Image (tube, rainbow, N blue to C red; front, side, top):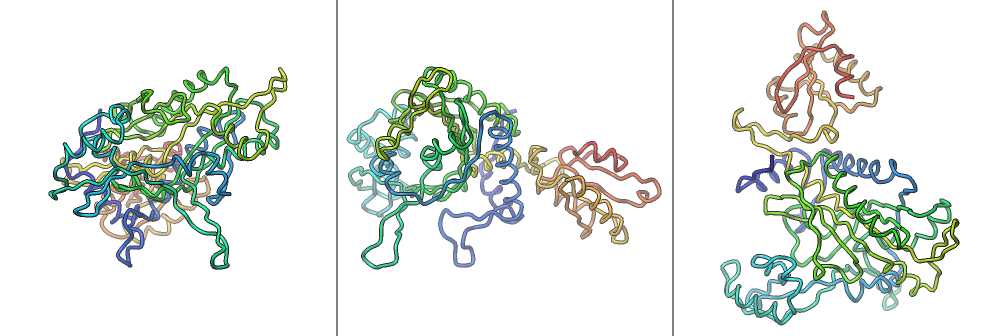
Length: 454
């Protein structure tokens, strides 16, 4: 069933995540820093589970797939060759009466589709913004010209004043993969198709970040670059569109809440031969969750030209030499996590407005919460916890508060099962296992419980 959102859904979700240890405002004790969020203990667990699932799906379970870890800071020539220094821009417009800046395309997407906006010239965009926005946010407007705004964060390298070199925080992880293509292919003795992935932080000086962790200036990406024979590249593109869709489903996102949207020719990036997005239905509407791009040979060709290093691949079976084409499935980890939280968060009005975080079972914060009914059963609870941990299961033991309040606590934290040790447990060697979503309880032996939750 497609997710239905209440009007104040994001406020309720955000407040719950802050209060329960998932997400905190960045630099909170100093008044915060806009658009920055720190992950607390539970948020970090969930983020790690998602990234580990991605690694298993795209790296560990596929042939010729490898993980690397390139650096945030790279030689500035990387960004010159890739085109980021000249082309990585947004169109910016300012209301001169308030000095507030906006992305021109975002303003117009309230009235036109993305594909329509992509066709407009800057002059047309300015005319349409003046037409549609005589006022904005209850303020009168006097619009500036539309200007290009580079999204790269600059910093400096060097210690001598006046002799510092400008370098950049990477805006994507992909370029670190491209410049290491030959290193990985050579050292792994890999044939094509060859997939190289990495998970890491990227930085974009967004003009209008927002929607909680959906769009932030510092974010984490999970990117895969698949190097293929040019003659087989469209086949590989279709394969990874399907694989990415199945990845999102297998992660636990429901089919009714996602769709595949193919980019029109006008929307395509300058390097792209084809792009499809997997979109999720967020509270504010459909938004990009994962992008799959056919990048052609653009990146390797540009780096071969800039570095003067031969980046061709020689097929060992045919001796044919060529620059591989690249298929790129890319997903923002923070954004994917938000989609899962949006889908999972519920206010159960039928049960006294209890908060339920119904995470997919493979993403459950812990496999089981162990709840002794009274504190004198704590020793037995610790023995059970030790047994479960030895089997590799993740547990939390809690003996504080009434059992009803403890059930509510773990319902709201995304822990599917609670194991309760009650008065009959010692004599019968059975325990109550409670399901957070259904609130159903079963009387089971420890062995049966282990078989169920493993």
